[in-house]
Length: 297
Ligand code: MG
Image (cartoon, rainbow, N blue to C red; front, side, top):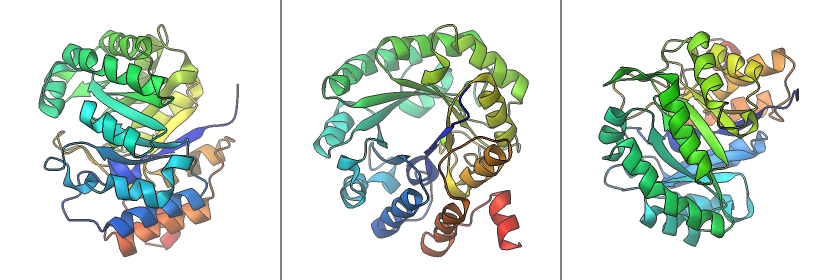
């Protein structure tokens, strides 16, 4: 099996969307530039969503323009609806992501409709995007646990994954939103989804709330997943999932993968520069262990 693992850097969107303070557009652009300089070939640069609900993403068009996203097939933006898709296309997005959940309760709170209703709404968006030559990722959050509904059954995740894949999503991102699961439960979900979606079309999107992010990534990679989401500095957390802390940190994932013999194309030194920039220019203190160890903190 390939020893190449592709890291999708989600800090500029997932990492920043819930930050409580305003963030200068220049700083968001600077972060994308530094992540690119570190070797990130896939970056979630922003989102076209309701600016009153997610104000940190309101300048996504400017970030895309300054970051040259029209020329970058790996730059991705999240869209919530038809209007968001239109904005993404107008701004030259080459890849978009749509977002649903494995839990109706979470979907209702987060996107205001049931899972099935969200899938119905996404189907024509995915078709339109694909007709425009745009790659589509489908996120599924709460793959093991929901803050409202408790434990989620793997077959519930598999059924959403099958629907998203069937409508034309080229990648299914499995989001362990609460960061509670251990590898055994990750494996159960991946195996259930693998009945409907090839491993090469799955991505692991894990959180570090209970310190399980890196071991869960290792489990996903051992099972054959070759696309892993991570956020520089461990930035992020879901605004609608109480208690959920950051995305697994890119530098923690990189440290583990490199030590285990996997290639990612990322430079640790330059990645740590990007993480330091979060601290100096975005005013967000990184939480990752590898960064702290590197800084001697
Ligand atoms: Mg996340």
